[in-house]
Length: 287
Image 1 (tube, rainbow, N blue to C red):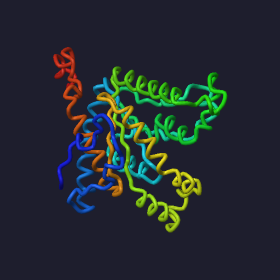
Image 2 (cartoon, helix red, strand yellow; image 1 turned 120 degrees about the vertical axis):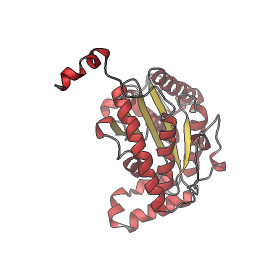
Image 3 (cartoon, rainbow, N blue to C red; image 1 turned 90 degrees about the horizontal axis):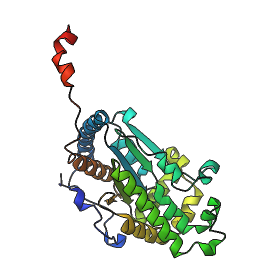
Image 4 (cartoon, helix red, strand yellow; image 1 turned 90 degrees about the vertical axis):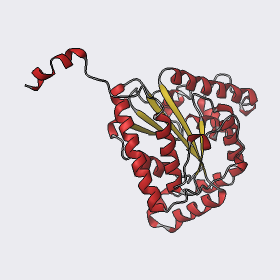
């Protein structure tokens, strides 16, 4: 199988999505890729187990992508080997009435993983500079004191929101949260094929919404927003990875390998040893 490294997919400073491939050839069959994925996930589970016992780091995995990019199935396949007690997945939909009574980051902050656990955000706080940027009228639902009309949602508004998001991530990173941000990069042609499969296969019907077709018309606008988001918020403590996702097994393997290779560098994550007082009496405890 073709060797990959996290840096192959990490965004250094800025990104031009038009220049980044949506497919990646691992030079291996689908069955072999899935076998390798299981191996990586087993190793990832060992790290998660040690991290749970260690109790000093949390891991936050943020997953973004266009409709049909494969977010749900990636989460299912990459994390199924991990202890369910140590992984919490949150899927952020349209804000509820309660969530709209708080600032836009509140619902994300209370969903952050505790130390020792993995937290997975399926769609993330970046929806607040993505969907709301494509549809700025949604901002009016937040009932902000300084936003009375669409005219108030200007470049300064978005600059401030990006600053707040960067500060949010910096704060949690400085307090022990290891952050990964993945953009699942699919082509418009592949999205069309996946939408058609939702119509053609009965077991996929539940996934289809006519609204998906309306959003597809805004493809270029979404791509421009994603490009700006990734370029303005990729940081050493909270890097973005752009993952070619036209092939789902390949995307899953790449994400799992990035997680594993990065977390292995934290050589201080290990299961705690027995205290000296327990070691001194270990035979007595055995008896």
